[in-house]
Image (cartoon, rainbow, N blue to C red):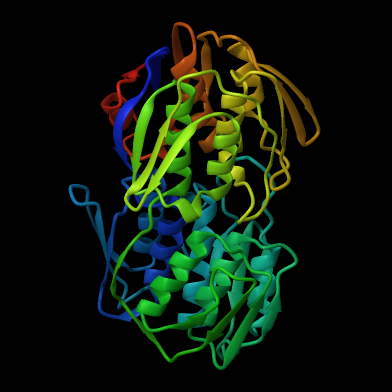
Length: 421
């Protein structure tokens, strides 16, 4: 088992390049299954564990996948698929594995998958995915840990309203409706930049999708899609994490590739906390010299404050002056990092989905673990400003979402090592 050793106290300075977005690349890799002609070449694909898993999943149904780590390019040939069911052991590794249902269903009229896994941050029901498939004419069977979706006569466009703007359901419906007969209108969809990126890729493949990023998406079904070349957008959550690292360590970091439009709530809260930001076409510079001030945050679906930045902000509030409040509205079990921060001396009180954080003068090094992906990032941030050397275990969570984390932090002056325990 590996662990991180981080000695706190070093201000981060320099430039860091943000990798392609994890939450965009996974559905886009799933969407390559729709390419009946030509191979797809995806650029800016980070070498994450989740990318490896989704690649293995699409390989299991017959896609040919090649990853070039040097130039971060993934090539997928899905012209000749051989199956409509993925192995259970792969599917249970990751929630995003359910995204292969939409492409397989619309291309072959059937798909079967075991109930997917992922971080234990909440129930994240798949009922909205299934509701969308049923509206398009599919039949659902659930039993013995499997879900079978069939549409022997093909999918037909319809008007679909999502009770909650689910990212995964929006993505699955976009892919399923891309080659369905007629028009599909998707109301109250998720509006995240990653949704727009998927729609853009599908359109490059030959789909006709309008309105992605708004509260109404129109999909006009086409006969077939082809593989194409595409570049993944930068990861706004990775960018936000490094922005907080710069501010918390009283450093000065230029976050290359960070897109302002994708980070508005994070930028606003960082400014409220007293950090300085300079925005340019190539990225965002973040620097701080004095103490940070506490702020209140409330997670919301995009364009609200992202739940994927909640844990990192809690780490920042732990050392900020004053008292801040964190309200989590998206996932019901996303405060598992609180106990780990308390091990380091954080003063945090939790009442259901609300956490009250009173800033302390200093955090103390301790042995902690990454309880999920973003909690792992919060532990790294806390360790960067703690007295002493912090040990962080359960690194497989962090590896799911942060490409070359150790190397990037070392380049900014962090004192961090990854060792075998």
